[in-house]
Length: 401
Image 1 (cartoon, one colour):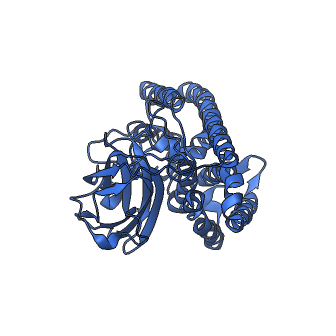
Image 2 (cartoon, one colour):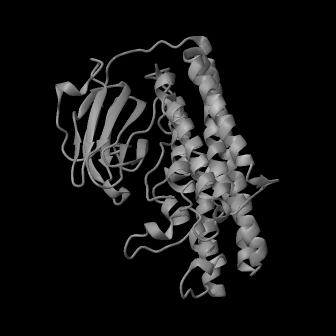
Image 3 (spheres, rainbow, N blue to C red):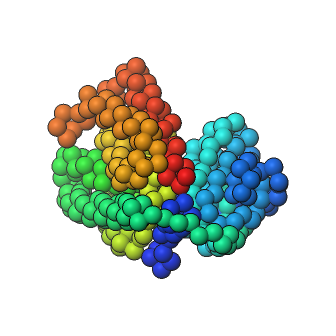
């Protein structure tokens, strides 16, 4: 995990609106600085295209009010640090949509369907803190987007299947975490090390869902390099360092009491995660954006070897993120076939190519250590990720068209 935040909506407010505006509604984030209205922000004339400029100390949003429907945020980073953009619910916690890892001078696009309501926009220069926020209002456009019976059936199937998949992965995560915690507390380090990347596979497959719980994610998956001053470091990576201390300088192993503290904390947070996931509902655009987000996790943490700094088990995470992204795509693929069959074919090809490439570094369920890869092999993996990222970035807009 890089430092991120926030929480998906619960079942208290159904968000299945309609293809494009109704069935495909998505959670939203908080804004940055005071909104600056601009007639030039809407490139398609329907008032739903918003320009966002993120700098080191400002988050300029071209308008603070748009009509409900499919929204497009074109986010440009004019600062010198990587930034993020979020559309949050009124509570400032629930994430409706996000774009992470926007590099300096880069422009990225977020497309989502939003119903009428109050929201918050937020830019996070340096990807730390609460971000620069502004209020954002979506008014009721009064539009009733017609959805055919066939399309509705595809949407319902995609949403139901994805919810089942996430809940299944969460349950397997809990089961494996219980086993891992028992081994770790009992001092069976070899067995704990063997189970560590297997257990985390279930986390990584649903990472974008898990990350949306802003209070749990840092407790469970924060890396040491992302700690803020005075912040307690807990979770998977705290235990990882204790199991693989070789890369550390002057490291003092945790005592049996400390081991129990961190292990039980991880288990309690995993149990809470499973409970919260059971309360979630999903939308088609949320599934599509989650698929894109998982691949971004690969590009910014796994292919760089930064995620599993101590254990060097990054390829397990890499594959798991790709698995989750592919499942998300495959769930909406029948709907995409009705809208953009060429994009669907391209995504199938790119996913297959990336899976085939990863298979070269796997024997059975085990991957080679990340340190065993050459620079050329890392570049090949990175190129394959980039090749998939481009068509995957078009998925949400195609589904909402």
